[in-house]
Image 1 (tube, rainbow, N blue to C red):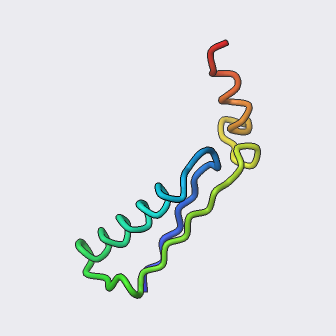
Image 2 (image 1 turned 45 degrees about the horizontal axis):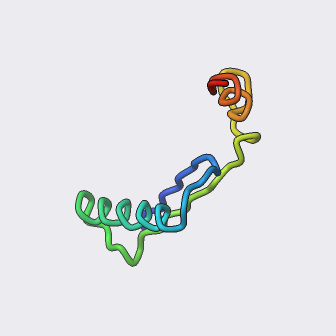
Length: 69
C-alpha cells in the first residue's frame, strides 16, 4: 500500500489543483510501479510560510525581502 506525503506552503493552492496532484500521483504509481489505485494514499499537508524556514529565516521573511517594492 503506497503512502505519499506531499508538503507545500499554504498560499493559494486551490482544491482543484490539489485534486489534480492526488489524481496524477496516483496514476503515476499505477503506471510505473503497478500499484493499485484503491490502495494508494496521498496526503497533502499545507504549511503556513511562518512555519517553513530555510537559510535561517522563515519563508515569509525571505519572500518579503525578495519581493519588489
